[in-house]
Image 1 (cartoon, rainbow, N blue to C red):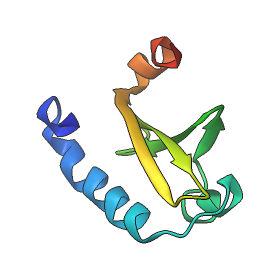
Image 2 (cartoon, rainbow, N blue to C red; image 1 turned 120 degrees about the vertical axis):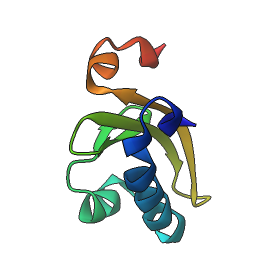
Image 3 (cartoon, one colour; image 1 turned 180 degrees about the vertical axis):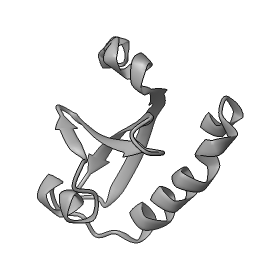
Length: 85
């Protein structure tokens, strides 16, 4: 799990999961109502986690109501853009 490398991730990731699990998002506009700093980086939706220190990279299938987690990266790892490959 992501919090194995940083145990301070447990609480914010669990909070995000609780919110996302019950959300009925139909678009990035809906996501931004809950998470104003979420960004769409085609085809992913990226969330800021733990005070903007981490990026949670997801793929949201709006029609099916599914959210897939691609990765959890530090800001520095995210900026390298290797995750886009």
